[in-house]
Image 1 (cartoon, rainbow, N blue to C red):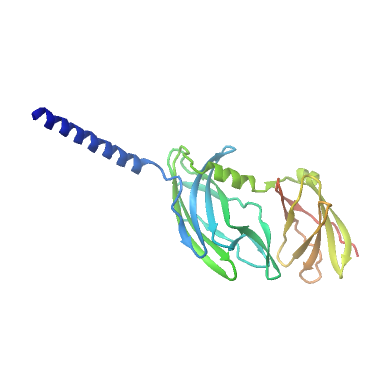
Image 2 (cartoon, rainbow, N blue to C red; image 1 turned 90 degrees about the vertical axis):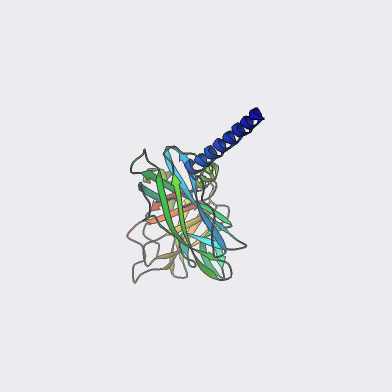
Length: 278
């Protein structure tokens, strides 16, 4: 009987020791993805995206329900751009949001720029002390719009260990693939050209021709007071930029436009407009 009691006691000790080990591992293991936080017509979370091209990434993922949409940094004629506040983070020296290429969305005749169903915003992060974990805190405000627009807010947090253990590296890799490549002036000149086109309805026009790849759409970010309609020219990989709004007598912005070309290989670059045709 004594031997049996000793064997049972030994098994209990081993089970207790194993349970303690599992508990320690569960506490010590860094979170690789946050639980979803519910919002209006949506849910959001932070994920550890690992390392891509030598840079460390997290990702803010928004999952939309039904036909709801959310918006790009320039929401177009309708919608509200998302805002990212990392003020509560610890040991985070840099947190830069990367925006995947948007799509054009018709909202009762107005043109909005944004995303449907699911979007991941890569966040390029860097620690103050590389030997310590980063505690990434994000106050995320965005809009989820279907028939009506509803504001959504998510308070998100995630611990990023010094050694990446990313369960969502593939998710971030796809999001980064959808992010436009930023072109320097010399590369931009090889990728696209611009020339004045005859005015239409008294409005100045310019033709942007994309020669560096297949263009699905083109988006214009202009200085305050300027707004451009974009009209694709079928089969020409070209777009007409129509000056729809301008401040006073200024019919050409002094600063370059910021152009985003969407497609299989999206790109982003600055573009200065030449004088318009009369």
